[in-house]
Length: 270
Image 1: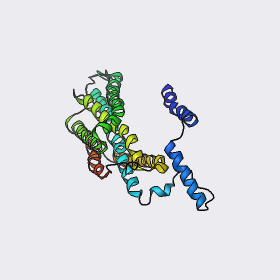
Image 2: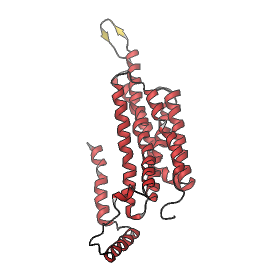
Image 3: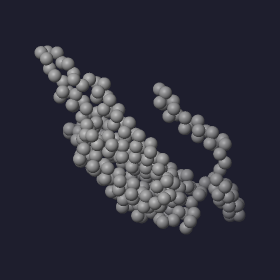
Image 4: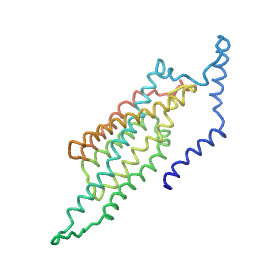
């Protein structure tokens, strides 16, 4: 319950921002110019900001689709790739506990109780989430130091290599498993420090918030579709976590390719 209450604090912060943080001067200036242009043309009311339809027609259509693609890679990677690490660890720990349970007559005395299984799962979760905390903080720094395109490419490469190593060479209980889970969490979440820096740069000020929001949240829809399709497939087959993790991790290779379609300069610079 306390976790949910703490998670609700952004709503309070958001309300405070609406009340206290001033609007962008550039946005206010463009809105005023738009109103004056509308008045000169005899238009009674001009929209407060750019139209959503503007994002899905030239010249912004290409940038919108690119933003959706760049935002989808990390969301799919997090939801459909990295999230399998914890249930995989839980399953292996439970299977190991069952295999180590000695049978004496009709009574069963567990050698590894539920607390040991829960501890393995919790340690994997802490390792992955701990890496994510660091990754979310360094994404913007990486994009500033290495450049927008190169940093995204390197993040995708690191995520692909770590995911492939984790799901093809390691298993829960291996001495390096939780270290790899930490690295996958760190690299996979570094994207989310990169996206808030780059996505707004794709769009002019009048549609910047809408464009960034659509680009990022469309990835959530794609991730949901991928995750549901995997869940449906699990109903008719034995869950093979290494195969699922390896295949979904290939999404990072897609990111390594599409980032080179990104413009070198932002709308404001061009």
